[in-house]
Length: 509
Image (cartoon, rainbow, N blue to C red):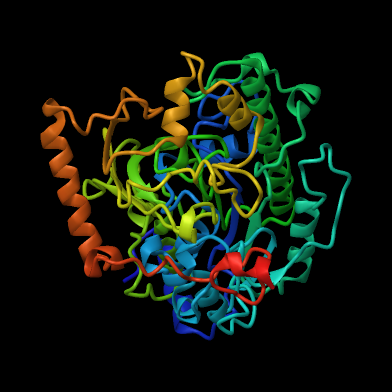
C-alpha cells in the first residue's frame, strides 16, 4: 500500500500505476550518490572542519539529514547488494561475500530492475553493485542499467579516477526520453584507497584541521592520511554540485529524489570491514521538493540503508517484494517535525562474512550486530579467528592483516605496535576478540571500551543479545537456523575468473 506523501503526489503515483509504464512524467526521478568508504562524520554538515561539502549540505539543508543511518555490512559489495535488494546481507546468499557471484534470484528483488520494468530509464557511472561477477549465474547486465563512463578528465591526484562523473550524468540525461522518469546511480570510486600521499595537504586540506578518531594515533602520518581521504570526499561533492546544477537547468530538480550516502566506513584500521561505529554508521541526506513535506529537518530515527529500496519502489509506484526486510521512509518524508518520527524504529542490524582471502582455510570472520540509540552489541561467531586477517598469512592483495586496506595508518600501527601508547590501538584493530562486545556509543563512539563482561552492563548485553537472536531467526540467517556457514567455500573471483575453489589453487595452475 502506497503511503501518502502529498495529495497531489499520491494522485500522480496512483495514476502512474493505473496507466501503461513509461508515459507519466510525474513519478519522481531518482539520483543516488554513493561514495566508496566514507564514515558519517565526514561532511561539513556533520561538523568536519577540514573540508567543505556544499552539495551534501544543500541536500541535507533542503531535505532531510539522517543522524543515525547504518549500512547492512561494512564491506563494499554486500553493502551495495543490501541497498539494492532491501535485505540484510545474510539473505543475499553467495553475494554476502566480497568478490562474489550474485544469485540470479536476487534480480526479482532488485529495486532498479523493478523500476526499469515500470518504465524507468536506468543507468550508472563508475562503481555499481561491485565488485561482483554477474555472468556466473546468468545476469544479462548489471541491475543498475547501462554504464555511462565515456567522459574523462584530468585527475588532480593519482588516487582519483579520471571519470568525469558530472559530464557522464549529463550524457545520461541527454539519452533519457522526455516522457520517462529516470534512475541514475552515481557510484564514485572515491574515497576508496589508494590515496596519493600528502595530496590533501598539497590541495588545501590542512592536516592540522582534521579530527583524529580515538582508535587512531594522533600523529602526522595519520593526520596526513586523513587529509588525503577527506580531499577525495570533497572531490565527489564537487561533481554532485554540478549534477544538481544540471537538474536545475533542465527544471528537473523539484521532482527528483536525491540521495547521498556511502557503502561502508572509512578505509582505516578499526573502521571499514568492522561492525564498529566508524565501519557501519553512514552519512545520509535525502531531498525531494515535491515529495518531502517539510525540508530542513534533522531525523534521529535509526534507519538502515536497506530502507532505501522499499522507499524508492513506493515512490515509483512499484509493489514492494515481501522478501525485503527494509522499511519505507515515506512516513518520515510525510512528517513535519525533526527528531524521532517512528517509535517502532528501535534497532538496526548489520553483519559480515568473508571480505578478503587472508586466513588459513580462506575462511571468513563472521559477525552480527545490533545497535540501538545508546549501545552497540557485536557477536563474533568465530572468535578464534583473526578479525583483520592472519598475521602470518598474506592476503590475496599481498600483505598480512589483509582485511585492512594498506595505508600509512596501518603501517604506523604495525611499526609502533610495541609503543606503550599504541599497544591498545593495535590490539583493537588486529588482535583476536571475545565472542561478545558491547559499547556505549553515546560516550564511546570510537568503540574503545568493551563493556560486555562488566556486571553492571549484563542486563543490556542480555537484552541486545536476545533482540539479535529474534531478528536473525525472523530474517532466517542461515548461521542461526542451521548453525553452519554457507559462505566458507563460495568462489572468490578476484583474479579468478573461472571461480577455482579453493582460491589458493589458482596459484597451482
